[in-house]
Length: 322
Image (cartoon, rainbow, N blue to C red):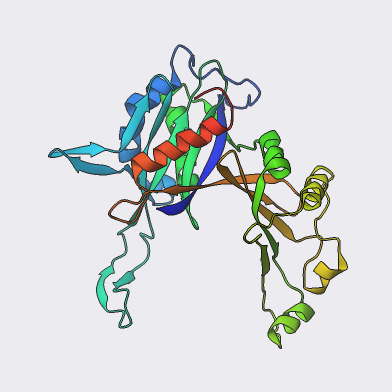
């Protein structure tokens, strides 16, 4: 198994220049967005022009099963979701060598300009009844994300299939649930990071400093064996979160290069679910969801495994939609 991240967004649809006139998704001028997506989205992705997404390619991943080619695309009428794997191709404007991963790094072939390297990503769109917004779940692997491309595809699909309506996509922030994790969860680690280290601190760490250089300092606090993060630390994080204050107010932190602009990341587990909670310099809560998934023979997430984890994650939010 390997670690992946799931990012969760909410979205709604509205007429042009009327963002507050939110439309019920199961009755969009007599049309159900879920049915439209179930019946038309896969083909829409497969035939979408690359020039409309910065020359990136998009298609639903296909597999050969029982002698037939099938799309990795699933729908569930009871839970009202579609999910699948989308392949996004990039780097079409670059000529790149593909080499063996060994000490000789032998060139196997050269990818020409106009050719794209495809990477598959999991996605899920949930459209609960009687709500004016839906949920979008996307896989992220390290720096690789489908967000920008999928964002455009979904917005364009809705615009073309539902009377030129606009779509607003927002980060899903489960603020009350996150506070539960921060207050009652078991802290696996606290990660402290300073994005830009001052010149004098860089010299302290490295012994010298080159003009114009930038460095990031990161410290990870991990409780070992039967140790735990003290309850007073949890209270301090919650208090500073609510009062929009920095975490690094001690001189000892400043002595090693951290200040009030530094960032805190908490990895906590509650009821068997783990959250990575990223508190940026303004202490805005930005949750990322760590999952472990089975890997297919190409080294990417296996669909059944990640689909199961995505449903488990949505269910853990207690939104009464799964």
